[in-house]
Amino acid sequence: MRRILVVSPYIPVPAAGGGGTSYYYYLQGLAQHFEVDFVCQSKPGEHTAEDLRELQRFCARVEVVKPDKLRSYMNCLVALGEGGSLRVAYAGSSVMRGLVRRLARERCYFCAIASHGRMAQYLDGLSIPVKILDFHDIVSFRHRLLMKYSRNPISWLVNFVEFLRIRQFEASQVERFTQTWVCTGEELKKIRHITGRGDIRVARKGIKVDDFRSIPRSVDDWAVMFSGQMSYGPNEDGARFLLNEILPFVHRRLPGVKCWFVGANPPGWLVARGRGDPSVEVTGRVETMVPYLRKAAVFLCPLRVGTGIRIKLLEAMAAECPIVTTSVGYRGIEAVPGRHIIVADTAQDFAEAVIALLSSPEQAQALAREAYRFVRNNYDLEVISQEVAALVWEPVSTFLR
Image (cartoon, one colour):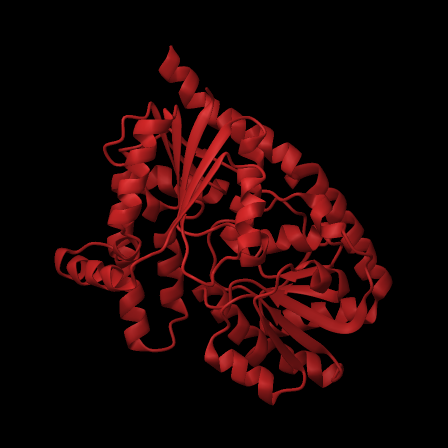
């Protein structure tokens, strides 16, 4: 039986954005080649019955564990004293650990995948032939970058301490798995340098391109958008950069431009900005990004901090929405600046690029068409599913020999 177990820190649905979107499609890709059991954590209100039904379409078994918030905080207190990562400690759950062990005894998996480093703890001691750690991105690198843009000394200190602790954790975990995955070549070089291990692979992320063309494209000529999990540190920093430094340049030339911030868990300051500024709309969580992507004139990715790959850019390409991004924003995606996307890093250059696309719909459409062809040829689910299946079989075949 080609049965595998995937353990995740959240329920993956397209509306979640980021890693939630990417692993939704990853599970679909894996299910084309294997029988997939999926176990995850999810708080009440973070998913719907429809979300579960959607996952059950391609997963043989779906188990959801409700995190115990009090226990998570107690885990963090212990980690503070013992020098462990708070991120890893917060994800600890005895209920989930017991469930994973029971399934491993009953279901006879030949392979288990820990989705994100903090899920590695749940595969400890399991007698499963092949165990894979899918880091997605190297979180320690993200904390190091967040230190640069921390707004106060306490924030800087928190990121510094977590950087040191989780970097040690990440390096130690690689030793304990049959194979380790990251999603960009840049992070592959970094983690190989830290660990000295050669059995680390790039597992590219992708999307089902046709999902983003389900409705006709009908452009609002004065609307731009930024999407993602808005409480996520790099996205929150990008939102501040966009609102405080980029949009003022845009509004001096094009005062009618409206910016949509689309995604779950917007912080209080962003919600307040949306209430007080008619040029800003903050949606909160939406069931699907598609209507916004098909209507926005330009998609913005003003990230100054980022690791891994931005699924949001692939989504915008699939929806034929022209993109302006920073160098950090498109890192890990093999797009060509000027052909598939526009890249700008300073606030003024970014704003000028946005103004240029809004002022020239023909140029914007040409850019979007090239980007669509690029994402279909390189990041569509059919392409990615073959790659991920090959990655799973690589250590399996070695084990069988």
